[in-house]
Image: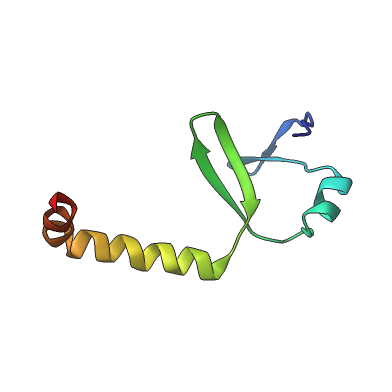
Length: 77
């Protein structure tokens, strides 16, 4: 895995990082694209945002909450 160093810069009330051009090209990202930030045991993972995946995960989480007791019973078998 290639590691690139970047700087966190102020951006209004938030902060942002710059992504090197070669990495933007490699991962088909462009200025203005939305990215997903995920916390991992090793730190923060930045990935291209996938609206279909995000919607699928939202539905899965709602189902897990709604059917929590049923899922618990099924996992015991």
